[in-house]
Image (cartoon, rainbow, N blue to C red; front, side):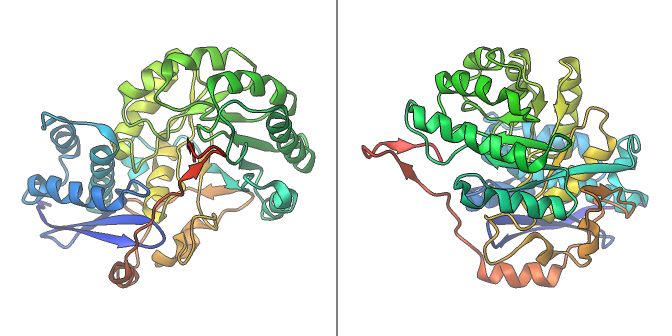
Amino acid sequence: MTVKIVRIETFLVPPRWLFCRVETDEGVVGWGEPVVEGRAEAVRAAVHVLAEYLVGQDPLRIEDHWQVMANGGFYRGGPVLSSALAGLDQALWDIAGKVYGAPVHALLGGPVRDRVRMYAWVGGDEPAELAESITERIEAGFTAVKMNAAGRMAVLATAADVAAVVDRVALARQVLGPARDVAVDFHGRVSAADARRILPLIAEYHPMFAEEPILPDRPHLLRDVVTASSVPVATGERLYSRWDFRPALEAGIAVVQPDLSHAGGISETRRIAALAEVWDAKLAPHCPLGPIALAASLQVAFATPNFLIQEHSIGIHYNEGADLLDYVADPGVFQFVDGHAARPEAPGLGVEIDEAAVRRADEIGHAWRNPVWRHDDGGLAEW
């Protein structure tokens, strides 16, 4: 079949997402999720700039299009352009799978596993309901959860701040028992000095990994954090290419967390995962986003040997007013059994988007922005 791209549309959908729809002259449609949370409008504009190149092209030349969109401009990279590219790349893979009549994981070399382990979010900013939230996830069948290490943190943590982090992780381990896992997300909220202080104190509770213990723009400090304890360190939701990941891998991180809606889509995430293998690091894609990003993540997970675990956002606290399942025709594709996702066999990304629901949502739109936190003295704090 000879196909050409004839139309690219974007949809600003609550609670904080951006979808793109790529249509061909043969009626085959691909969907992607290009978004920077809190900057969706900027990514939307970037998608339409890239669409000037894509319209009229053969959608099946995915790698060539990726190279042009990523490297054809003199100025390149960064969250906005990489996220615009990511969503369009997802849509092209979706089209390819539908044209060839195969799920994307088959086009990536075929499945290397039969099911994918998932983890669920349980909060942690405010620990009052932590035990209850973890218990609910266990009862739903999940064998792993992720929690925030803390809410707003002082510039240098007090003894009470540190004790509160340790107490949260200890509580999580008590509720989970020894056979389940907890990941601890620092969200870049602590300094490198505090990360070196805190990680050894939580090591006895055996976290699966400590996520973003320092801000991602400080890779020169990462090795000292990694070597401060035996806790595996994860990072990557704010890294956008294999070149961004290399310094983190050289510093000794154990888990890479590219986001398929930020880090160049399916094409680049596959390369990041392959690079991570060189350093014996595992892949755990970041995905607190919508159904298309999750579907793309699962396709990669099923075809990637060094995959570890997959995040999802169903019911997450960000999803006020709309949720992931509101935009899919068959919610059953995201039904998890015993904390695992079954291998999708439908062509493309394996999810059918409810186009009517997406168009209705776009009429409402959103202007989601992340909170701005401040320290007690009025200075800006990391959110």
